[in-house]
Length: 105
Image 1 (spheres, rainbow, N blue to C red):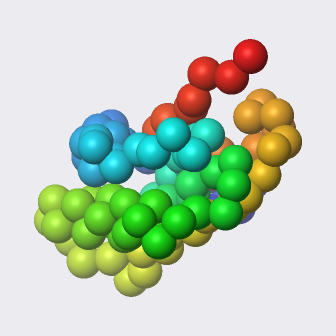
Image 2: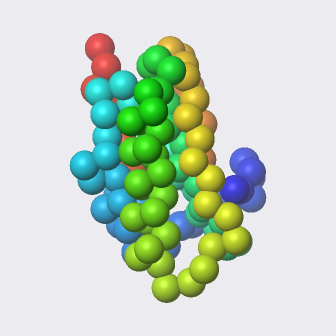
């Protein structure tokens, strides 16, 4: 994972592959999906409204498997994190890239 101030641009092909990896795995409880990539590490952070169900956690793992299976290089680590929050979406850390954002009034 990268830290603020040291972020490097994520290659377009990696962002597109991350987008592709979440297709079919977004649930109504998911408010936003953030993504980080660099230095042999990648991570998906799922911001959810309520505690994720086992099925939702499995969706997160499927996203990780989908993503890693399409890479040409091996990752050192691949993190999947769920964060329960009701903070406004604009106040959440989107890591390197926001892959999904639910419409909220």
